[in-house]
Amino acid sequence: MWMIYGANGYSGHLIVRMAVDQGMKPIIAGRNQEQISEIASNFSLEKRIFSLDNPDDISKNLEDIDVVLHCAGPFSRTALPMVNACLKSKTHYLDITGEMGVFASIQKLDSSAKDKEVMLMPGVGFDVVPTDCLAAHLKSRLPSATQLSLAFQGAGGISHGTATTMVENAGGGGCIRRDGNLVKVKSAWRTRSIDFGYGKTKAITIPWGDVFTAYYSTNIPNIEVYMAAPFAMRFGAKVTRRLGFLLGSSPVQNYLKKRIKSKPAGPSDEQRMRGKSLVWGEVKDGNEIRTSILEGPEGYTFTAIASLKIVEKVLNNDIKVGFQTPSLTYGSDLVKSCEGVSIKDL
Image (cartoon, rainbow, N blue to C red; front, side, top):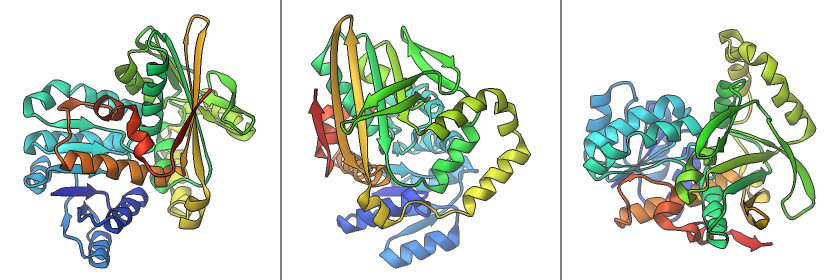
């Protein structure tokens, strides 16, 4: 049996819908009894209501669960309570985070997970399946690579959960990897013109999950991750260098979160169907350079497709215990099995 926790969130609900369309029968769970009950009734699914405040309560609800797909963010607050419960109940753990600090926290539990014969794989959605698999693909094209650059561009809106995570991390600066070490840098530390296949666009460095995970997936010691950003976004990111302390204050955080809740929960189905995502990657070793571009469905659709692919593999006992990345366990071709994905080598 398997569980989707946070099934009432934007991404969680989308994954539930897609899972049911594929004939899957997840147990859905979350802390909001009214919302979870309504979803369970609509899709004729078993439900469980519990919060992440009581470790024993979480473990009890996971006792008969083979794998949990954790979709309730912000993961900086919710991931470790669920991971620790999974270790206690010997339940495999997946989530859809993109928060670099979460990957780092979960990686520290690698030995415990191996002792318990549990797989811990954060980042099974758009964060970080396409970027992680493209990084591994590029490594195979240039095994001696010492530098990796990744970038992505997407179209469409963002969910409440994603927006809340962005607000909570505003002013936190950026991060890159140099000589195998994580190095803090300023927000929008570097701007680069990148051609995703449709002409060049400006992109800025961000502390994306691959800054952490791609090192484990590829052993490449120098990593930067970029996001395509219009002028206003680039300007705003640089402004946070001076105003980070203000953005992190409780009054500003509360105001911004209220604004988020007043907006739509996320992109409409029509917006998702029209949208697409582009991922660019480059590896270098001296003068040797290899570049590839991945094109796929819109980000939230990508998350639902990729996470369910991995859930299916885990249910078939296709696992590696301990902390894992998607490409480490399933290879770079995992992303090619996702509907609507293509990779072009340049």
